[in-house]
Image (tube, rainbow, N blue to C red):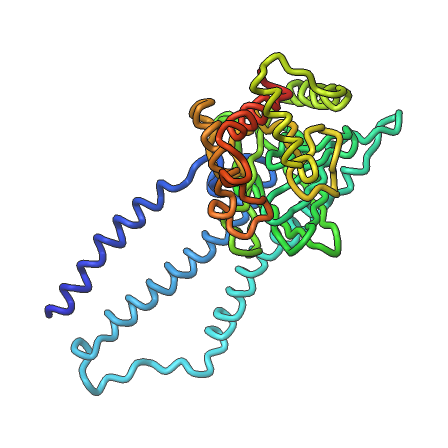
Amino acid sequence: MKNGLKKWRFLPLVAALAFILSGCGEPFLSTLQPAGEVAQKQFNLMMLSVAIMVLVIIVVAIVYVIAITKFRRSKLGEDFIPKQVEGSHRLEVIWTVIPIILLLILAVPTVALTFELGDTQGMEVEDEEGNREALVVDVRANLYWWEFSYPDQGIVTGQELVVPTDENVYFNVIASDVKHSFWIPAVGGKIDTNVDNMNTFYLSFDGEKAQDADNLFYGKCAELCGPSHALMDFKVKTLSPDEFDQWVASMQEAGEQGDPTFDDETVARGYEVYQEQNCISCHAVNPTQGAGVAVAPNLTTFGERSYTAGILDNRESEEVRAENIKNWIRNSSELKPGNKMPVYNEDKLSNEDLDALTEYLMSLKVYSE
C-alpha cells in the first residue's frame, strides 16, 4: 500500500514537468511554431502522424478496458471460457487492412512532401537577362562557426545569415572539416553539411512570423561534431525584400572601399593592434573576401552582430557587447572548447590594447549606424 502511494507521488511531478516544458517553445527557435512554408508543411505532416498514433492508442485502450471489465473472472466465474476467435477470417482481415490503410494515409503525403521539398530546380531559373531570379546562399560549416556567402551578389558574412522574407531562399551546404548539419528549427528541417559533396535545399521565411521572433531566428548544428557541438550556433536576420536589397548594396559598397580611415584615435589604435596581432591572417574585414577559403569568420559586420561567437548575447547594450568581445578574446578556449581561435592573455595583449582592439571591432558596421 505504501509503495502504491509513493508511485502516485510522481504524478504531480510529471504533470508539473510537462507544464513547465510546454513553455519552452519560443518563436525564434521552436519547431512547434512554424515560421515559413516549409516548416508549416513539415509541422502539418507531424500533426498527421501524431493524430494517427493517438487514434491507434485510443482504440487499443478502449478494447483493453472492455476486455478487462466485461470478462472479469470475478464477474463471469472461474469456469467461464470466452468465445474463441481463432481462425476468424473477419478479424484477420480487419487487423490486416486497418494498419495498411493507416500506413497509406501517412506514407502518401510523406513521399509527396519529400519530393516537393527536395525540388531545388527553382535555384537555376534565370530571367531574360540571364540573371538568376532566386536568392542562393552557399553555406560552409566549420569547427565551430558558419560562413554564408552570396555568390550572385559577391559578398560573404560570418556567423549571421541575412535573408529576405516571403520568398524562397536556396542553399548549397558543405563542410570544411567534419560532418555538420544546418538547422533553423523554426523555419524548416535540417540538412547535413558533408565534406565530400554538396547538398541543396530551400527555405522560406514568413514575414509576419519573423516579426514575432523579432526578425532574428536561431540556427543550430544538428550533428554531433565535437566538444563544442552544442555551441555551434548562428543567427538568422530577416529583412523585407526592399531592406534586403539595401543591405546587399551596402555590403557591395563596403567591399569597394580602400584602406580605412579613422576619426577616433582609439579605433585607429585598435586597427594597428589588429594588424600587429596578425588577426588578418585568419579574419577578413571586407565583405567580398574569403568566401570558401577563410579559416575564421569574416568580421565585416562584427560590430552589428546580435551575438558574439554565436553564443554571447550583445543585444542589451554596447557595454555588454564590449564585455562579450573582450571575454571572447581572453577566454575563447573556455567558452568554446576545441575551437581554433587563439587565446590572448595579458602577456600577448595588454588591457589597453584589448580596449582599443574592442573599439575597432565594434566599429565594423555596414548596415546599421
